[in-house]
Image 1 (cartoon, one colour):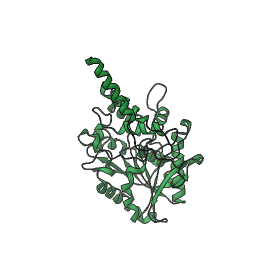
Image 2: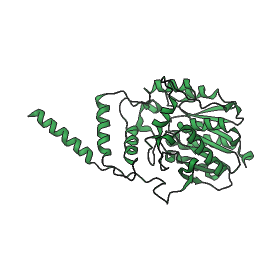
Image 3: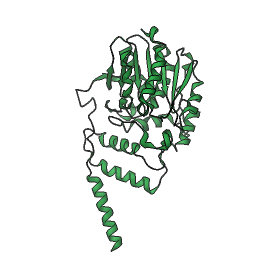
Image 4: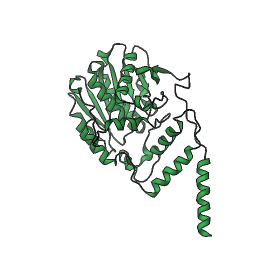
Length: 338
């Protein structure tokens, strides 16, 4: 009888979890005509937001993930008193259009960034500010188009070379939690809750599930070391909407047939003559100061600032200090950009 009662209680808990209401998943630009957008490569619709006067020097902000969006980087709007600040959600992420997996390629992500640069730069050089995966993308783009970039800010890129990719994956168990009963239960509970997501499109349920699971603190979280005290609750990585398919598609592309990491986000950066600021959070044990010093050697003119008391999401954890560091870096090129 006691065993039967426990089984009934477990079944009731599971049904209760499935019945829990969840926050509605927002529409993308493909479904909401009120959202501001531009066309990226191949006509893909990208959710965009600008702050500051047109005609001012342009700062393009590139969010992390892959699969996140620019919401967590909105403290950079403070730069709008001197610059036109451009935020955009990458394809398959945030409120931008969802596309088939075969269109979620590194080449396409670079092409979208180029479309944003050309649209708002209008023939002028722009400043790029990239965070995490966005910093990797910004570095790769600068190597491809050094003539289009004035100054560059790379806030804790995770990997720029096969060597740093290997070390990052070793430190995070391949960005996967180690299996345990607690992890299995968390996954099952989150999946059951996701059954309450009924739209607004075919990707909504998976987006909600992946975003919720990746942001839930638990013992042994693969990126807990990014944050002060190894406490994921200190993260400030809020999103409009997570893009579940972006990271798996890009990770598949980045892995060679033998399982090794085939990434190169520094090819061509030696041609870039502008100054590069690397930002690191003092609490980040995985891709903080030590990792960024390894990345710096690939650039001709690079320096590092450490944001004290911050982890990986420094723009949300320490916004005033982080934005001030970016402003100091960009101001050196302000006269020539004007």
